[in-house]
Amino acid sequence: MLKELLKNRIEQSNGWIPFDLFFNTAMYEPGLGYYSSGTYKIGQGGDFTTAPEISKYFSKAIARQTNRLLEMHDEPSVIEVGAGKGTFAFEYLKELEEIGVEIGQYYILEISADLRDRQMQSISNLPKSIRDKVTWLESLEVDPIDGILIANEVIDALPFKRFTIENNQTYELGVTLKNGELEEAAKKSGKKLSDEIEIISSEIDRQFEEGFISEVRLDFQKWFKAISGMINKGSMIFIDYGYVRNDFYRSHRSKGNMICHYQNQVIEDPLKNLGYQDISASVDFTQLANVAIDEGFFIDLFTTQAMFLLNESSLSMIGDIDSEESRMREIQKLKQLIMPDYMGDVFKCMILSKKISKDNFEELNHLTHTL
Ligand SMILES: C[S@@+](CC[C@H](N)C(=O)[O-])C[C@H]1O[C@@H](n2cnc3c(N)ncnc32)[C@H](O)[C@@H]1O
Image (cartoon, rainbow, N blue to C red; front, side, top):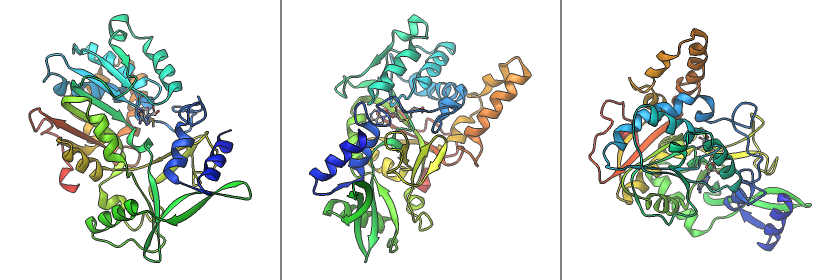
């Protein structure tokens, strides 16, 4: 079905579609895409896993870390973008209740109807006083809130363009048909993409080598503008895997930063397992910072996930686990989130704020100077 739809789209577009259009169809086509058809499997035994699915202490630690941002407002609200199975919201809200933090509303903005159903299921297990605060947004047209917005591993799941360099010129990678099968094909890029690649190249002070392949989120500012328009006063917290621009486009990443997952294995070919495999690409945190500054935000924090989670009080509740065996089990899970060889260093946390006081995370090791 998905394959037929893609074939039709390719035929209607004179035999070629750009990668970002392929991505949007493969991931988000209502009823058919990976995230929209019930095939999305995260957690144990799934295609890949995310921090809230690994350990509930991820969400709890974030509740404790963001408390200082919430208490700046009289009646703060929280918006979660891309809530997956609803696991983060469930644990985060429980922890806020436990540490006695009152919020007004908890909004969820979710693109996938299937995941929205799963989130509702998860939230229905919370006590009524908490679950009554949760509302799913139908669109971005909401009265801007005072409070915070949280997005864990959402930017990596946004569409991106892929490009390559041939004869010193920028080519855009996309998908064509050969003998009725989908196949990757490059086409001389349009002006918007080649101008952007020139800007990146001059920023990092390096000409891309012949055959170099990478990605860029060309419409990122549009997305950020829409999302950040939901915040009147407060902060946006983005946690994701990625690099500063210089590292994102390093010559040793000559095949790019895209990664596909199917049944917990890394797959090279994004055209395989259509609708059944996850496709994502690292975040260019310099792009996120630049766009945020353009939209009137300041960088409140940029650090590694490990540094963000390992704050003195944010994980102290692990010590309250009575059984030695359970405590050790939880510590093992946490290690996956914190150890540099796993998610600790490659995952970063960026907090962007507006209309609030500065220096809210002074005690943490900032990487902002590397952006
Ligand atoms: C990799 S999953 C992460 C899920 C969850 N945050 C977690 O950590 O387990 C990406 C999530 O973002 C959602 N998503 C992707 N693009 C979105 C968009 N433009 N607006 C809202 N949600 C989006 C997906 O449907 C999915 O819920």
